[in-house]
Length: 381
Image (cartoon, rainbow, N blue to C red; front, side, top):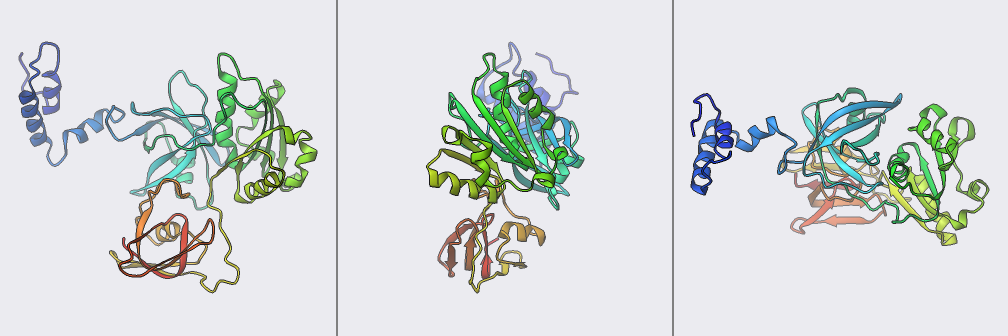
């Protein structure tokens, strides 16, 4: 078989594996060594990433196919995932890696699509004040750009088959995992039939993400929609649930939204022993009343950088605000992508107020996304 001298090492390698080509391991090994020499200091896999970044075996990525505005501050990002994407169950989330100002930052977003013929996936992002990643995705993401992806995670999913009577309680961007559930149920060849009440709270009518779609579902009789707009109706009070949903005791509740709402629902449903499934987007912060440890200086021993922790801000956030490049993942205590050794000092778990204290040589590790400084501390990073 004749090869043109103009062919690249990688093209030569591919050509040699075509029909009728020699298949011996030694030949492949020789070709790989030639390719490696030609592209040094890159590896052939690096070159392949440039031409086929979504191939099987590559780091999982997604190419942005479209950015669709939902509200003034939110947008749906449609992605074509790499071939190793393993799929998801409606209600699950994934980690997304975004390069902002030369730094890769990871955030977690719910998957918001139902079945798609094109096998694309979607996330819906609400820009939050000072949110580097959310603002970048909503304001600056464009078709053709690549994002790093993790596989789908989470157990905030409907039972199969779902309960006959459902109450879905959402607020703000808490609607995002629930819209995936609804789209999945309503787009099946044989749609799921269930008695669904959706209670959604937003700042105003125009701030309701997927508002037109939700109202269409209600008009079609697929669900009962109760919208509460805080600019007119005020905040949702769980004490009003019996009035809003008279048959509450007969329903299985799924809820996603701010910590305060979820805590109130847990207390309300717990007292009555009603079934409740929740999805928390943010770490619940426990106030340490009367605790003299209100924060402290965090030193990163390898770099010598110090930042001030105020006792209620996760060390991860305080460090990033101070210019420290930190490992991170889900940012809510699930994935352990932010774990670092605590060489010395004390930190407080923002979920339950528990103190962790370390002395040199103890070998203590902490999750920086859910712990705040509880005095001066030294982290090995």
